[in-house]
Image (cartoon, rainbow, N blue to C red; front, side, top):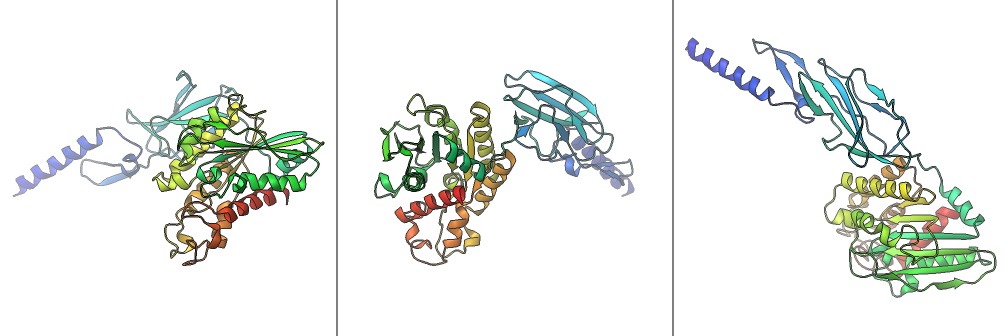
Length: 390
């Protein structure tokens, strides 16, 4: 019996050593244990964790991580957009490293972070082997109040509203009852001495770039400057679709179809990201990518994120269970990291929501479970206007 027990013990030790010898990963290393020959636990090794990274970097950013243990060291690799390695620094101890090589503003880089231990190398917790893309650019700092002053003082200002079918106006009774159209009329009331022009995006189908923009629609005629309002909404869009159609539909002069580059972009997205199963992490990553691309290619444009209105699964569910609550929070996080102001449209919808009430709990604000009615679109326009000019 003693001999049998000895054989079993030896086999267990061999199997344990084989399992440990297959290399460490960010997930498995967090619970790795090393044993002495008597199988008594002498050390619990916790893989180092990379601190959350902002999407925007300084020219010489400082990268931080949790304490290295068990003789581990850190390795920092930074690649440019072509995949060329410009930084490869290994054997780092401590908990941070400040780049010695300055990055170039306006360029996107990929950071890869590894810990090295016992001859093995694995990504730190919080980053994949593929790394994380980062834009070297200063964080935006314009507030809604700052943007309002620009509108008031500019002689030629262009605002583009970007989003999905809510921005396009699904459920509207006419082209005059979308929230961009209501907003343009609010502008004409405040700036009665200015010309207010509107361009409406014409869909070519869902999730594809716009077919074209309408001819300019005159909302108000004035002599002291011009404000242009552009509607760039496409049905069923997720964050990825905004990225796919940005250069055709709302960057620059949108292939010559708009009179000038946008001075302000207001981005409303999230209902389809949630509805088609994107996680809040994926949704946030889409927003960060979209925001950084606009910042890189059109840094003079101010950007505002607007949280999604509402997607009502059941009018009998409490507001605290609305499926878009977490996506609204994710958008706020992305806006904060990018330095963008936020218009919290979702909060307005949830404040109005009545559990078990008519109109999917939204009364006369909803046309269906996802889209506002004419009244709901007017509420949206008023919220945007009041947040800007309060």
